[in-house]
Length: 250
Length: 250
Image (cartoon, rainbow over all chains, first blue to last red; front, side, top):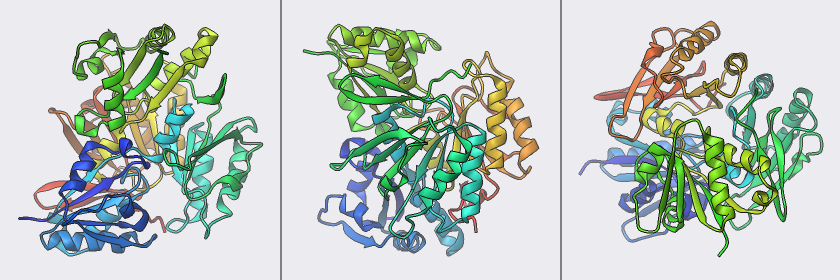
């Protein structure tokens, strides 16, 4: 029996947003590696060894998973959302590149999933109806100057802008700095949505404008969407308004 | 019994990339509306009325679906991929905005899905490991000057760039024009991937560089990913190389 590593996207939270491919992989693996809260989302079963680790040790976690796979184990490493979007796929490929040559020959498969931006967009109607970009606000691995440059370029290109990792206990101020950059580039009436824990029990959405927004409502479970110049609200009786970025820019 | 409209993402193709939520909605609806090839992906069953339409009539299709829902029917309107990403969600919300006021009171739900960009990224390893943008190259609804401006801004921001709708029989030249813009902005060694029909029987991937790429390999089933300055290849013995955009930009 030869080892394998599945890089599994659990989706934003509820089981009905997890792909059947991901569910099948979770049923087949012998070892489950991941950040504790994601490992906790997977139902335990006999024969499945759990390896929960802390946040911000992605490379060590990837190396642990690859080591197990190289020993012949069938291993899953889990992320929330899509592993390719600000999650474990990059850490796994970085570990393969840096590790022993035999890791490059392993059977490694990335299993895509619904990302937080898409769950938020679904609840909000159609905010991503035009061209869009996604920016992680974490400066653990890139300088703030690059994040600032990207926020400005996203505005120059009039992209709908999804902001991942807007804030954490260790980084409470960056979302304020990001909004200062965005306010210098985009109109005060630009629609903004803070979408928190979409699909989970504590789901919450705040719809506001760039001028009125309180960046302090964002936490590490929040996905922020900042509209393009064409993004507008569509009011609905008895329900929250929809955000619409129309397909047409003519 | 009151009507409802589900805006359903079928995912990139294979059933194991379709969410359980989408499958449940397909099992519950009475009317299925969509572009012919997407309607054909859904297994027929007694009691399900099929309404297949031509391409490029998204607004009429959305109005037809909303009309049925307003009559009290339970309706699904289907897209490939994620309905929020260059698909039917925006057309439905536009139709709600422009149509009779009672459409705004309907029970409309967008069900997210895995988009082509994510399926391509999964096959390619980790090309979206950093900040990225998505641009549709179709100028049916926006001027080419805006597409050009966005390609330049994406390069100014050093975003990994996913190109949707790169070419069709009616628009064979735009991917050449887009590559001319990108070649003026990014290095010739920038990795480029053409990912065609990912997850389907005729899946094909071409990995090349911006300098070497033949834009003519792109068709309407192709998703193109153009790397950032940090994107690189990770060679694997006996398998296609991985594309890696590392998390770190330091």
